[in-house]
Image (cartoon, rainbow, N blue to C red):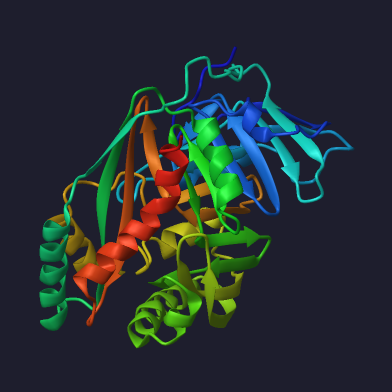
Length: 391
């Protein structure tokens, strides 16, 4: 059995084999708590085991060093990948899984294994599902109002144009949460979102940070939130908030891409809230080695941080009650070609036995109302609360 390698070491002796397999009826049957799950409308996969851990910037290089034995009848998407949910701030690592089982957009199943690596077996839940819960808001509404008012003062003084403030809610149950059950519920209840899971951090994100296929680059920033699309299109405050995000994404992509094109904004209704969405497409230039370069250029966008970025991050550190961890960080995967996709890790929570820590945020700009922003965070918490607190 090979031992996991730690970043930034390159492991040229690793060998991967990819083969076609019968597509599982439900990939969630293969989920293990320490694994990675990625479910979208154009393909899905579940990963387990650890062949290597690598710094994001070194991931594509390590993957290219792996000898890949691709069966002639395996889908072209099959192959080793580096996966993970990175922290909102600070360094993080991606994992090269020992095994990946996936299904492509045409429904064809595939499997990639690192030869000799230890692959944990899926575990069926043997404990009863939670039935009793307590929910504790780490920040109550009066304190939230104070946070927002402080942010509005900074905006009025010209220190900020926008800052995204988040608050945490903790759920404690009478039995351990099962990540596979939560992922199944999110998959069914959050159409249009990417359902993700990484070592106990699970959620359903509506926001594509960036996708790269060859030189084609796609980003879909979201900002501006309302209960429905009708109210959203008449809100100048939400239009202004959204434009700040689009401007930042376009500016970042123009630094490493050509032919940047913008389509939007368009109001989109999700299960609990509506958002403005804009599609930004571009062609990566020769300086882009992998999707990780694009992630680095884009994150954090004003959709989760604010603008100017440095001042917004300072305000977040001062006003929020604790670190965000992986909430609102980049979550996704990259392959040996440098292709891949990352979402902003929203509408999720950290599961730890019978405890779950959820976050939700709201963008504060001139004209923001603390009560309305509180209601927005409540709506954003709803998908995960419903996935956890069920009869």
